[in-house]
Length: 367
Image (spheres, rainbow, N blue to C red):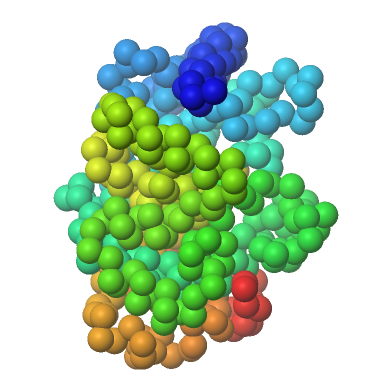
């Protein structure tokens, strides 16, 4: 019994590798089709199929197609291949974007490839880090503060996306299971309202808990708190015991990556060192991808420019005139404006992304 978790993990890895091999011809067909289009258009981007030996895949220096077992077809007998497209590292410095054009090129090539579709098991994820490559403890605390403060204001943005995909116009995190969209919300939980630790805290208590943390990983574990049931707790104890006897054994699962904002990559020794924004739905168009990416980057820029210290967290900051439980989309838009590129209006930057987004309507409490 002591060995079961290791056997299970080995079997899962083997199944993933076998699945990737099974779908390789499909991935290769998509690759060939996309690269043919990119060459014809004179674009420098090229796509390759993931391979463990690929330098581009390991260093994130090129576009890569890879197997993603979390993506499901319409039925168990569906012959579609679950593929993820991973981008190279792209830069957004606020004043200029080097990622807008290549993203459009890739989506054009994807549109030109036959038989590519998205469904409600797909997601769009953005990994963000400072240009220096290293997050500071202060910046992560500031970002965490703003994630909690504006958690409700983000919700209507997802409502429009669900509506556009033929699902419910409105969506509440705690709606009955039968009323939820079919997209698996447990993989993009709210960092406050669905956090095992923070969900029972007031805003002031939650921010106090963030500010008292002394390390980056302590902040990460709080923002991505693991929800333990009896089975998970047993797995955790098992991993702890294994690590005590063998430092090379897998670490216990003390952070859960399946949150809207995932801090798990900040684990010491992880080469990525990114904060991942996981909440946007699966998309098929370049405009939506760019707007969600702009939203994530602009939010992080604005959040890390907010200055507050531990003595101020119990008071409402003058930058945020509305109490935390009633922040709306209009307030979020005002907050984002300082993060826009110079001499750029909100409408020029985001187009109609925020159009009809309930500008001054208050969102009901998520608790």
